Length: 222
Ligand SMILES: C[S@@+](CC[C@H](N)C(=O)[O-])C[C@H]1O[C@@H](n2cnc3c(N)ncnc32)[C@H](O)[C@@H]1O
Image (cartoon, rainbow, N blue to C red; front, side, top):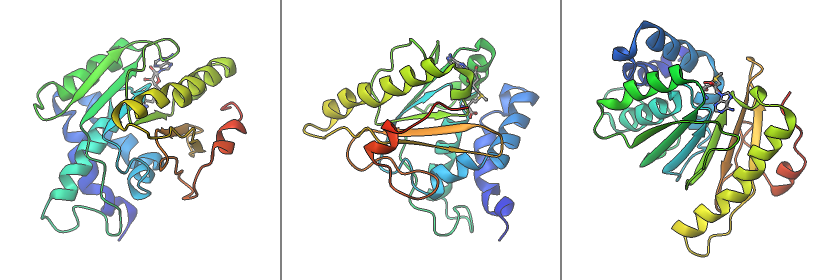
């Protein structure tokens, strides 16, 4: 089956959140979810498996929330081919916090999820360089780091990899926070970083495991 066909139920369901948020929001959702391989990779490789509280830094219109909620619905669906064959179980989203500096993105995101009573989606208007990160099981920075200068990228990644420790120990006493983080490039010259808290996180789109070394050896996103 072609990639487009395999992803169609997910894209239809996820973009459905933007029907009331205007033509731009809906078309943007369909275009980006279909074309940016990072979204499919997050699910296909189980990068957020077992993570239920997600912090999405630079969330835009909240596509990741729509994607994860759609994944849950498609995985639970009885419809044939609703969930791509061989993909692992998707994360069960209990809490999603998206942060974005652009008020228009924030408005689109808030509109998209306002009517979904089951979605634990919170959209914060703020700057990821200084906003409070709160608590999360995993932090996703998708197609955003290149907006920041290199020192700011390093500060954000440092805050993610160290601040995350506190969240892990609050929810899972004794859990050792991993400093695992990884990024990959997409044809859009974008960067994605998935940082997990706890010992099992930190898998990247290439499928290999990330080690703390991968973080310390990182270079700024160019
Ligand atoms: C290319 S979009 C990616 C949006 C989303 N992560 C996605 O993949 O659909 C980059 C987003 O980063 C946001 N952004 C850039 N600098 C930011 C900052 N310092 N704080 C918060 N958001 C920022 C922009 O407003 C924009 O919405």
